[in-house]
Amino acid sequence: MPEVTANYSPSIFFKSGHLSTIYCGLVRRVNGVTQKRERLRLADGDFLDLDWSQSTTSTRKLVILLHGLEGDGQRPYITGSAKLFNQNGFDACAVNFRGCSGEPNRLYRSYHSGATEDLEEVISHILNTYPYSEIYLNGFSLGGNLLLKYLGERNTVPKEIKGAAAISVPCNLQSSCEQLLTPKNVLYAQRFKKHLIAKLRQKQHLFPELITDSDIKNINTLKDFDDIYTSRAHHFKDALDYYTQCSSLQFLPDITVPSLIINAKNDSFLGEECYPIFEAGQNENLFLEIPKYGGHVGFWGKNNCTYTEKRSLDFFNSH
Image (tube, rainbow, N blue to C red):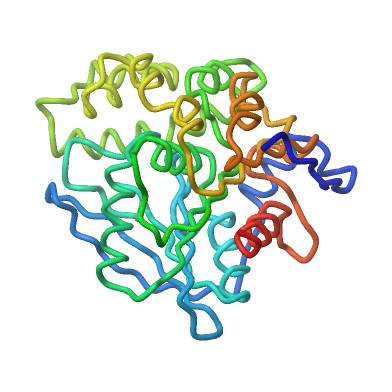
C-alpha cells in the first residue's frame, strides 16, 4: 500500500518529539488493568513470563503485546494498549522478554531485536492451549521490529494471525543505533546503557567465565554493548552483523498479513532508513503512517489513550 495519511495533531506541548517521548515513557500512568502472570517454559530450558488481562466480555480474539528495549509488561504503552483492547473485545497477552520480568533469565543468552524463535514459541503455546480464533500482534520499538521480522521471514504464519501493528520501529537497526549515538539522544542512550549494564552484572554472577570485568569496563556505548555481549551471546560476528541479520526492513516485502507501521517523523531514535516508504509501496499488506509528531512511542492522546493505541484497535477491527 502507498503511504497512509496520518491524522494526528496533538497540543503544542506534545508537538515536541522529546517531550512526547519523555512524558509517555516516564510520566504517564495507566490504572484499571488487572494482569495475571503465566510462566512459559521454553524448549532450551529458559522461561518467559506472560502477563494476561481479560476482555470485559467473552472473546476469541487476542492481541499479543511486545515491549521495547529494556521494557516489560507493565510499561504504560503496554498496559494502556491492554486496557483499550480489553474494553473492546480483546484479551491481551503482554510478553516479557527474557530477563525483563523482574527475574534474571537462566541462560547466558537474553533477548534481542531479532529473537523471533521466542515469539514463535509464545504463539505456538497460545494456539495449543487457548481457543483463540483471531490473534493480532502489537509491538513497540524493538518489539515492532521483532514482529515484522517474524511475519516476513517465514513461508507461512498460523492462519489465526489476522493482523499486526508496529509502532516506532527501528526497521534498520544500524541506522537507529547511529541515531542513538548522536548528542541529541545522549540522555536516552545513557539510560539504556545503565539498565543493560546492571543486567549484565547480574548475568556475570551466573557466567563469570563468559563476562569479565574488563568486558563491562569496555562498554562505553550501546554499540559496544552489542559488540561485547549481544553478538557473542546470540552467535553473531559483531554488532554490525547482528544489525544486518535482524533488521526487519529486508523482510517487509514478504509479509502476507495486513500490517500497520507508524513511525513519527520527529522520532529522534530513527534514521532515514527506518522509514520503509518504498517497501510499503511495493506490498499491498503494508500500511505505513508517518505522522509529523509523536516522538518515540509517544503519541499522546486525550483521556490517557494514545493515538497509536486507537489506530491499532481500528486497524485490527477493519482487517
